[in-house]
Length: 306
Image (cartoon, rainbow, N blue to C red):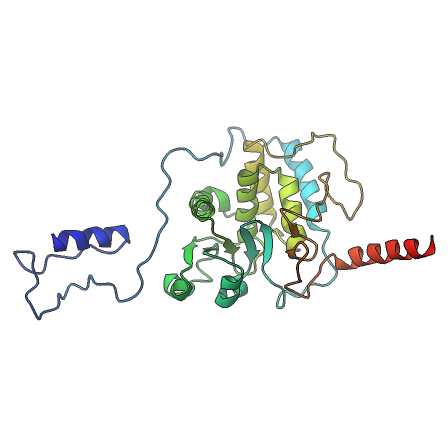
């Protein structure tokens, strides 16, 4: 019975099932089994694979019509090219893009104390070959679950087709546990952003342009990989999430680069300054603070002089 229970324990945590030390299944008193089945470090926790159909399609038969693909590539370019003139990636903080989702880089994933301060319970590593030292043992003291996927930051790599199912299951596990997750890759620009945008589209039923705008407002310079942009267009097309307002939407103000209004707050979160609404800044970075500050000064001037 003892051996059987330990075998079940090993199977639950993805460990090799031990061989039975002696014929009768018992370890003689004073001896230690030599098969090495007792864990020398915290067991690896894995999210079980989801059974049944997931609430999305990775692709659609026939693909995206060329004219639609070209149109949305242009729209994405207009959103993603609206970057601040200067941005220091070595001093920025991880960007909160939803109530329980942060987007960042390998550097943010290293700061375990900062993860704990922000309530992060899960870490999704989208660059396993380059960030391989951040495994379960690295996060064990903080009791943070980690999932890593192999991905290459190249336009030809099928990021969503190969990895999104695993990523979605892990992110949903975090949500159902009322946890918070950091999605990261090496620089926090392409692989992690692609997964993050695709997940938020499905989770919140947001269209592609709105989702990219929100993520880009929180973390500039994301998604320079045109191959990943095309994959997101195909993903959105397959799930009827290209946009929510029709094809006749036109771009207007360059500071509002998408047909969707650029929200100052997303679920109580200030996407311009990256800190909770009515809270204190967590980072000196403010990619759109100049515009907001100028607007505040103008309104103050008008009030005084009226």
